[in-house]
Image (cartoon, rainbow, N blue to C red; front, side, top):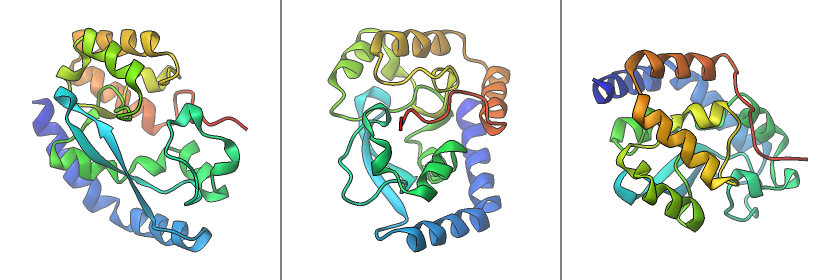
Length: 184
């Protein structure tokens, strides 16, 4: 049921939000040089590496780093707004439609985040598809605290339900959570 909901909701989201996504893409291109959509390798279900899509929020010369490692000076002014309202995540609806991700689940990590990968492997977190949002994100737990993150991920996997996922989606859409991990 979760996968069917993901398919229907991501397809509907891509269609309904396409005007918003087009407007964002144009604004990203106008605000700073570079592509509108940023592609980054992430680790997904069963530790398979996939290409994750996001609206570009940083200057093109910024290093490839996790959000908690990003300096505020690397983020464009428009990017800061997109990150604050989680609009940079909208292209991940394509990842959900493709089956790389789910709407709700553990946030996918970078292949270079070895401590997160090891902790998730030990707790069998990679048995679930990563999500656009999840309880750890809403609680402000990021990749900088792998054990705490994995604990939240594992609790989600053990207790996940359709109604629970709907509540997480609603909380994310209404701006709940700690927001962006980028500081200053």
